[in-house]
Image 1 (cartoon, rainbow, N blue to C red):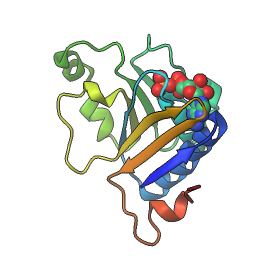
Image 2 (image 1 turned 30 degrees about the vertical axis):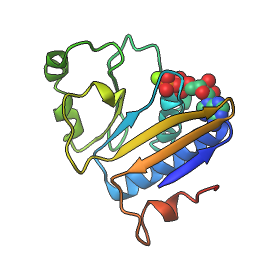
Image 3 (image 1 turned 45 degrees about the vertical axis):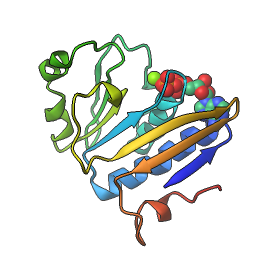
Length: 154
Ligand code: ADP
Ligand code: MG
């Protein structure tokens, strides 16, 4: 499904609704794609608040590659921005985070050497100073699915 947001607040709000959906469906991981400044970290701040994490606790400086939050389920924010080689990803054990019983959100999923076919993906595209196109893939859209959780504004 595709949603257009018209402000930072709307992007964060959409992330929150998506986070609620993720939690209710016990989804283990989501992969985020999009250029620098697209809004990935903003979206994740919203998701984090659905897990009870204050948005200000979500960093974007990328000195920390994996930030772990002691929530139930556990929340892992993995930012691959500084990753250069795929063997660094293997060393991080990122697949274990994604299959840990907690929830892992991966920023800069472009850096992953391979992804499972059924992965939940969020692509954020810049469409103007006040415009972001957010495309969510890999989640059920049937009744009770993501569409019911996230009422599209367009
Ligand atoms: P990334 O993590 O993808 O590099 P950030 O979330 O750090 O991006 O930054 C995205 C920037 O875009 C922030 O300044 C945020 O306020 C802004 N932003 C997010 N969504 C919108 C929107 N719909 N319209 C305008 N600005 C937005
Ligand atoms: Mg970021």
